Image (cartoon, rainbow, N blue to C red):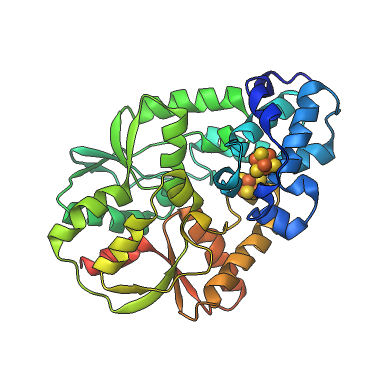
Length: 352
Ligand code: SF4
Ligand code: SF4
C-alpha cells in the first residue's frame, strides 16, 4: 500500500516501546478486549502498513477506524505519541487506497450539498453585532439552544455577529481521512466565515479549527464566560450534578478547572464521577465513531452513563454537543434516570 501520509509519522511509529500503558484507559480496548483495539495494537498495525509487512484489509481498516480520538492513550503514553494524529494519517492512506465506507461518503456528500452534517437546509439565528461567533453544525441545528447561548454572551456584554450561512469547518472530512475533500471544505468555510478572531460555541469545532487552521484564533465560548461571569453576579441554582469532561475540553484544551469553577460560582454542587478531569471516560461519540460503528459508540455511552448513575445525582452536565447527544441517547434508552444537560443551559438559568 502507498502510505504517503503515514510516512510523516515514521519516527513516532518507531518509538512506541510497546509498554502498554495505553491499555489502561482506552474505552475501545475495555469494551472489545483485543490487542488491536488499543493504541499499541493500532500502532503495530500502522507500522505494518507503513513498512509493507501488512497488506491492507477490511479488518485492519475497521480497527483503524474504531477509535474515538478520546486521547486517553496520549495522556498516558510513555513515548509521548499522539496516536489519533497517526490514525488520521493511516485513515487518509486507507481512503486513498480504496478503503471507503458508504456511511462516511454519505455524510460527506450531505455536508457538501447543504453545508452541514444533517443534510438539511439550516439557517443560523443571524446577528449583526461586533464579535464573530461560530455555532458549528450541531448548534446550528438546535436553533433555540443556540439563541439562548447567544443571549448568555449578550448578558455578558458581548455583541455577537453571527453569519446566516456558516458551513461545516471540515472536521468530519479530517477525522475520516478525506484530505482532498477537507481542503475544499476548508476553502468554503473560509469564504463563508471570513474571520480570524472569533468565539466558537462548539467544543469539537474549536479543537479542530485550532489544529487545522493555524492562522485562525478561535476562543472557546466557555473561556469567555469564565472570564466575564464573576462580574455579573449569577444566581445560585442550589442543585447537585455530576460533570462529564469532554475529551477535547479536558485533555485537548487543558480545561479542567474552568467548568468546575463556573459550577461553583452558580451555586451547583459537583459530585464527581470516579473518572474525571484528564482521566475522563469517553462518551463514545468522537473520531467518527457515530457513523463508523454506532453499536460500539452506544455501548461506550452506556458505560459512561452508568458511571453518572453511580454518583446518585439526577443530572449529568457536559459541554460538548456530541457528548451531550450520545449521553442523552443513553439516558433515554434507560428511561431518563439521570437527565443530561449542557452546562451552558445552567449558566443561562443563572443569568436569567
Ligand atoms: S484515542 Fe482513545 S479510543 Fe483511540 S486508541 Fe487512544 S485511548 Fe483508545
Ligand atoms: S503507551 Fe505509547 S509507547 Fe507505550 S505501547 Fe502505548 S503507544 Fe506505545
